[in-house]
Length: 149
Image (cartoon, rainbow, N blue to C red; front, side):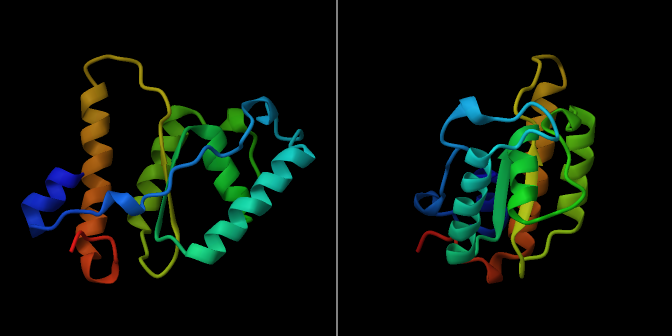
């Protein structure tokens, strides 16, 4: 992404302000069905909601089904789905939808696949995802405060 952005607009993204975290602090509380979202997960959702309200990020990238559903619940997006619902093909469709509906005035959730089975399409997936995200960053460059000065 950094390469495409630089080649097109001769600017670099300041990566020192990128916040990275796991959806939950303890992987043992990750639910395995639609109905089991325990109190521990609910408190993690509230915590992330508070952080998002404070910092108002323009872009949130999730890796895999559970983190994507977790973010949907942070934003109270319905209907609720179980983590097993988010197959690679459904996540790809959600990725395309999120790219097409990108709005710099709101927080955008971009779901990516967590695991890629190595094959001829692996490199193409990363190229496809990176190019699409980069294009949205470039299109909205004047509204994003993410640049190295």
